[in-house]
Structure formats: C-alpha cells, structure tokens
Image (cartoon, rainbow, N blue to C red; front, side, top):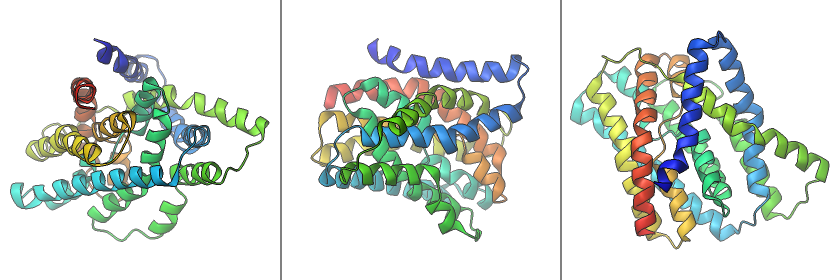
Length: 298
C-alpha cells in the first residue's frame, strides 16, 4: 500500500494535466510553451541543485555511469532486435526504437525525491549521464544526417546542468547564497509543472498503427529494462538506495518528447505519441510492482 501512495501523487498530477488540456480552455500551445520553460529553465535548475547539495565521489559517479550506459545499451539492442523478428515498416521502427530506452525525467526525479536520503541526487547523476546516450541513439535510428547534432547534444540544457553540478560538487566550488536560493526556487516548480505537461502529451491518435511493434517497445521499456536494471544493480557494488534508484530509472515510461523528435526528423510521430501514452498509463501498474520487488531484493 505504501508503494501505491508513493507514486499516486505523480499520476494524479498527470491526470490533472490531461484534464486541464481538455476542460480548462487553455490551449495546446500554452502547455507546449510551459513544457519548454520546464525543460530549458526549471528542470536544469532542479538537476543542478540536486547535484550540488550532496557529496558525490568520483568512484560513485563512475559506478552510476556504468549502470546508466549498460541500461542504455540493453534498451538499444532490444529495440533493434524487433527489426529482424517482426519485420516492421522501417520508418515506423526507426521512429519507435527510442521509446524502448528514452525515459520520463520528470517522473523519475519526482519518485526519487519521494524516496529521500540522497535518492534525488543519484537519479540526477543517472539522468545526466543517460541523456546524451539515448539522444544520440534516437537520432541515429531515424537514419538521417541532422546537421549540428554534436552541437545540439553539447548545448542540451540537461547535460549543461549536470556537467555544471558535477563540476561544482567534485571541485568543491561554493555557490553564493543568493544564486543558490534562486536556483532552488526555480527547481521547486519543475516537477509539478513537468508532470502536468506529461498529462497534456497523452494521445490516442495512431492507436491502430503497428500494434505489434508498439507492444514490443512497451514490453522492453516496462518489463525487460527494469529486469536488466535489477541485475545490473545487483552486480555493481552499490548501496541499497542506489539500487532502488537504478530500478526506478529502468522502469520509467518513455519520454514525452519522443514524438517531437520523430516529427522533426520525418518519422511517424503519431505512433510514437501513442506508445508514449501506453507506457505512461501502464507504468501506473508496473512501477509499483517493480518498487515492491526492489524492496524485497535490495
């Protein structure tokens, strides 16, 4: 029961976001602008603050990078395995592979915050390490040369915030109190607003297209990735809390921005949006199950 109440507030906010879009009279454009604010300003502030407020050792960062890279590799490999097994439409596959390994950062940080005890910092490190890996894999899968990809990766606000936070932490660089307070207040609004935006991104269009491929990616994202996460967490010399965070990270639904990338690169954003919706809704069942398993084995 405690696990259920741990995730309930996040899904209530997601449901509220969906309801606001449908009944409040606020436009889709309003929420798109709000999501941009969260992604480019509020969420980087949260990541930076989380990474500077807790001591992190180089050895700890290395272990978390190993876990993040291993999980990303598993997701990428299994998403591509669908191509010879299911023989789907190549463009549909190229659009959907990202849904197997990209992750919902808002939900991940919110759940980690609920755990307490430095879990948010651990999740922030994993997210920071994983963002460039999954973005490069997702762009490569769409099989088009996107000019300035490296520049976009380097300028990604989540990567910049993670890098700055780790440098300040590992280098013992002090943050002036007024700046620290301002960053903290910006970050405080990130999770609630981010989860509202998740709700506004839910979609039913494209439900009939490539159902077997959608089922494959959802299975990888919600079942196989968490299983791999549990194995990786047990193999590495980590604390129980770090293992919990890794399993939560591995069990997250796919990123809400996945359909945007598919649209920008000439893919099929409708089936990506519906896969994102399916994994988000099903994660309300799978996340409590994996958290219960984590409590039993870690």
